[in-house]
Length: 97
Image (cartoon, rainbow, N blue to C red):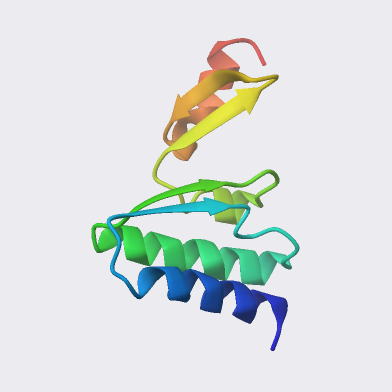
């Protein structure tokens, strides 16, 4: 079994009880970009069914990053952005970055 499949099985195991909230710490860590994207796609599908998913992801690819509905970016323990991943570029350009 590949690492990506083990991550899906682990997430599936958590979903069996039909929770309303799932907390995931680095669900895409150690995965290749395609497997990470597939995990993000799976999480997006579950969120569309009404499940609230909170995940920490330290280095997502752009494609994976855009799968999320809302992102909170932290720097040195402070929130520097809270909102849609689709608006991040404009937000930081407006701030001069």
